[in-house]
Image (cartoon, rainbow, N blue to C red; front, side):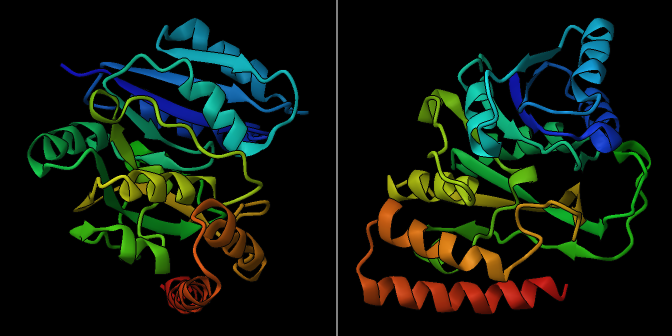
Length: 257
């Protein structure tokens, strides 16, 4: 059985953290390690993490030496990864119980080291657990196949569904950027020639419009997308402009789902 290293950044997430962790521990694929980085929380997040760690040895929390943001927190967790796969879940999102089992089986036959799935999009006020989630019809559908060109005009991969194969790619860290670190990671993997495959089944639960969400304000992401295209991907101005226009259009359409 492959081992999955689950990466979770945490900052002041005590209100939602428990549901997120329980959705990981309730996975039907039990060979996993939950690598959590507490990014200088000022609430009870670290106390809650330590309590989970006492109850389940698969929960491996560690405090960041200083506040570094979600990307740095994820990297600190990934640097500790020992699994065959690396999967991502934020501390206010959830997985359905069969998420890892189905995705591992899909990855074994998909021929791509980066896979992702469809996911449910719920209101920020949703308080249910991943294990008892009732689908409400709002589903963000995963594309069957995504390559580098398609990803430039839209981030088709929900980070809460992404999983990459460490045996193929090694440990791939996120760039130190204020935002869009996950998007940059997917692009770097595909730029190196690795396509991504999507599993159409919705297997995760995303809270939309939540306060403090890195992507809750779509307009605020425009300068970060521009910096991603120009500095990280080193695209010329005209190609960056086309990608930015496409990203803005797709983001507007996606926000209405």
